[in-house]
Length: 308
Image (tube, rainbow, N blue to C red):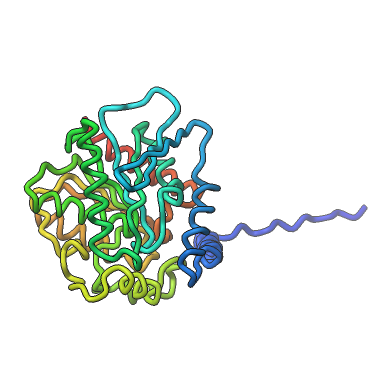
């Protein structure tokens, strides 16, 4: 009687699985990216509408003067005292509240807090300082609703992380009360691109490259001093800043933007925490992955901690 042997397939290593995932991310990002900026924006909105959903999520449109925005909430009893002001990414040239749903819905679900996202004016049609002016408009809207500054957590990803920092620097410059805390995911803090990771991670980053960053800088800040703290908040004065939590992937060109920010904040005696996620890419929290949800839980833990 012949005995058949079954050959066991060898499971790919974690490194191989991660490499396969980054290859997939690179392909998906390539499908969204488009030299026609309007088509790029439309593709992002389609992704946000597709992935930014949940059976217990409520989305309510809002008008902030002449600016569109939306409230993202969980459809259950939840915390009303504190609110999250969310600044979306997209290099200041693309992105929207709809695209940001890939993050705002997770943030609302993990914190059980209301999240306000807003559609600030985009470059190149509206270069600096239009976006920052709109962020101030969103902040003032929350104040008019009756929230105190200390009831607000400001969060953002990529260029939205830049905006969150710039907003707080602007509030500080105006001697206004600062928010309770900051949550930053892959923040773009340095438009001068001085960090070493712009070189060391150039080959592995599946999302960003220097050509893209240069075009976004040209759109947003052409003719401006790129080391202006309201354009590159890395060069700002962080004394008196609220507690800040930073997340970044170790496979992204903006790694140094996060690590240098963390170092400067610590030097300014800010209560700042940095988590570098091994094998992850730019704003990996958007992806429907276990690590993305774990990162969002860490965001929630930080927010709960500072809201005690």
